[in-house]
Image 1 (cartoon, rainbow, N blue to C red):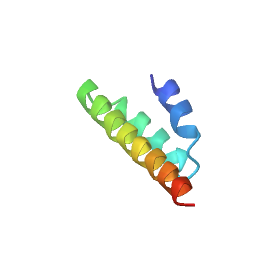
Image 2: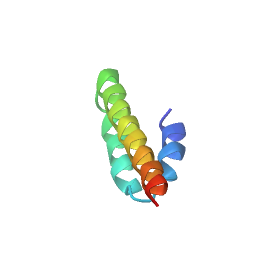
Image 3: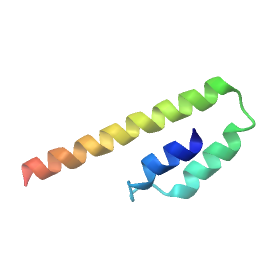
Image 4: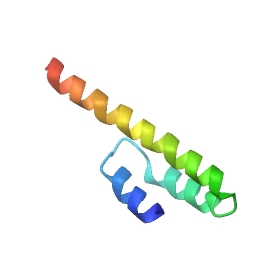
Length: 60
């Protein structure tokens, strides 16, 4: 799961990959709910970033 999500966020160059690696390393220690919550937050951030890129292209 972390590998797939890593591929998903790799396309967004504005996000430092190291932060995500740290999150996933820490998540191994934490419980499943925390992992799911973290992934959900990052996914929402990804959607917001993608949406802002589209809006910027439309504005141009």
